Image (cartoon, rainbow, N blue to C red; front, side, top):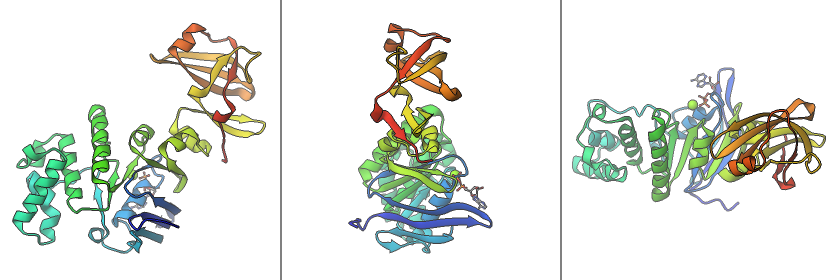
Length: 328
Ligand code: ADP
Ligand code: MG
């Protein structure tokens, strides 16, 4: 094992709340200086996992290692991690600067040093001009950047973010996710970001961990997880895939990898059920044997050069290497 000493590692980490097993013996080795998204539906155990890493929740079983040391039982401030909360949790009566400097004040750092470091963090998140404002004089996006600066002032090795974009409107959410990504690259520390949105995870992450029912279904580079889902759950949750049962087993094939051809040239025979125009693409769904539905996402040029209509009999075709066998 040539793990860098900077690595964050989960070793058989379990969280129980009474009879509920929220996280079930998960293992993961986070790549250093990477942006990792913890992705999955509500209730699958993402926040519990993040809070255990942060130290805001106790570990029922297993260990959390950072830089080779077991941090499972250390206080949050002693771990080398920092958490940015969903609701930002800013102090309403403190200025932006004092909010950011708060943890240094708790540590007994003198006022001048605190201020200098807070201003440095505010410049990092582009908030220098608003340093003297109170939180309620800021927009949601600006409050979020204050929360980010407040977490980063502790110089964490790992920044933990729990659904950090969910309170923002769609426009700001896309802008902020670009800023988070840029900040992570600039700082070179690891970000672990919890989200239930697959588009958000794909846009941000070097690596995606897909969780379901308290376990990790699949983890890997974002592109690998999207391209080659290993389970039906991952294929359906990531979207853009068909899950098809064939005599050899269950397979996933991307909707944009399915081509329409004549019945003689097709691998499968199908009947067109619906055609939906989506601007750049046309989504065509067709029924195949076994009462299964397959969606083909065609470019508008490909579709309109040979349009099909509900009731047409067609052939479906794909390259064999686009078919991924599912294990469950
Ligand atoms: P996610 O963040 O993926 O939505 P959570 O980690 O918040 O999931 O929750 C995982 C499971 O643990 C859920 O069934 C949830 O109801 C349960 N749970 C979370 N926090 C607590 C708690 N403090 N006490 C009891 N059960 C909890
Ligand atoms: Mg959660």
